[in-house]
Amino acid sequence: ETGVTQTPRHLVMGMTNKKSLKCEQHLGHNAMYWYKQSAKKPLELMFVYNFKEQTENNSVPSRFSPECPNSSHLFLHLHTLQPEDSALYLCASSQDVASGRYEQYFGPGTRLTVT
Amino acid sequence: DQQVKQNSPSLSVQEGRISILNCDYTNSMFDYFLWYKKYPAEGPTFLISISSIKDKNEDGRFTVFLNKSAKHLSLHIVPSQPGDSAVYFCAAFISNFGNEKLTFGTGTRLTIIP
Image (cartoon, rainbow over all chains, first blue to last red; front, top):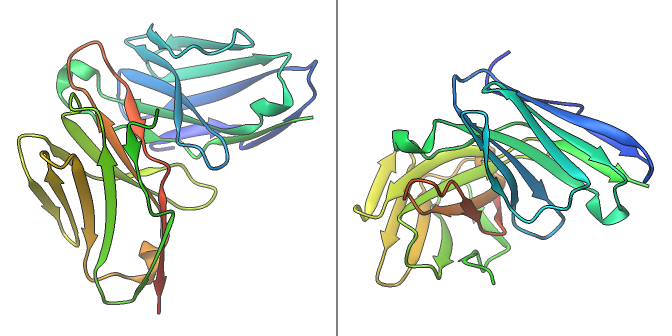
């Protein structure tokens, strides 16, 4: 596998379910990100991890819980979601910010539908 | 408040001609800009970037121009090819340490007509 992978690609869940999204990067990067893309809206940053430490929580509701066990893996744990949480969830990675390399590389996304 | 704006939601260009995608920003603290391309069912793919110390960066068929005084950047694709049909996002970044936020525009759907 190369680049940034995400599983599952599609997920349908009820409002009382608990599920997790997984992201893995094979680029040797040290920063990882979760984004949400809703219809007709720009990409919204949710969380940033730099060297496994969370450095940004962009006012995300607590029903979304990130986990970064190491620099290559990132999870997004979901529980008691609302229908308006249905969106495309994208993971990205980059070199650490201090490197001066700001390009982020994205995975294919998980299309989440909350019923 | 939308800090990065792409005012054209769609653009159609004849194959072989030049495609020009535009982006405006409001935050003068932005000092690094990127363009991404997105196909359906895929994540955005990084295309080209430019630092605010430059006004032009070129990579093959892609050139990005930055006009800091107008807070405007544009992506030129020449010649346009059918495979360029996709949604293009511009993004902006403030490069002081501790701020890792990329702020994205809403995207422009480019269609190349054969």
